[in-house]
Image (cartoon, rainbow, N blue to C red; front, side, top):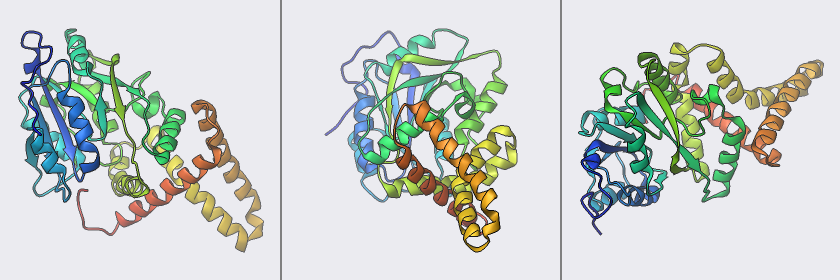
Length: 327
């Protein structure tokens, strides 16, 4: 099977020569084929697709080769942020679509984004997200995001997707690059610096640029994500200590604090008022997310929150001792 960006499709002038697609990968064999099919099926085809791989041991690279994508391999250091920077450095397009391997584009996504970029004030475009879940754990995460995400957590008013799936004018990267020491908050840090550097330009949420963005499909993938976030959170906190980061940290740590308070109460019954206060905060948090997401997944959200919190704390603790860098 072989695909090419030169195959038939709607080409408007030299528009196809504007767009480079950059996809960081590491063991994405289960997801990459669907992702690349959606990229190569675009009504306006990109000029190139760059796969920046962090040392895959599965069939990720075989799939990338079968589509004719350009493969770049990370060397000494591997992280999604580093991979994105490498992709940008090796790209030739003036518009860059930076996306993860678990994203599927609707067929006119690129074409519609190029049209938005005709406004010279636009510096970046965030797509709109379509709903599709391939596992129950993914459904829980999607509903959780619907109930917990806000302008404060994403950084753009009205946004529903994060900056990890976005179109950028390449001129952005002449002044701003992804900080490779981040795992948690890398997109947030990048967005903050872009908005500061290009204060007179626009970040647009494009309702006609539709994508399907997956969450981890399995418990293992889920655990790996939150351990990685825990390992890199201190680096994020060192630069972005403020109300937003404190709220994020408090939300992630709250279930572990509940667990510690319960254990403390068992041995010291006098701590009951403290336990009651912490439980009330936790229940209120889950209730608000249920209301905002219009779901009745209270028990599922409780289990989800405890699981992500313990994985995050494990990553946080190991970051103090581990020598391993990157993902």
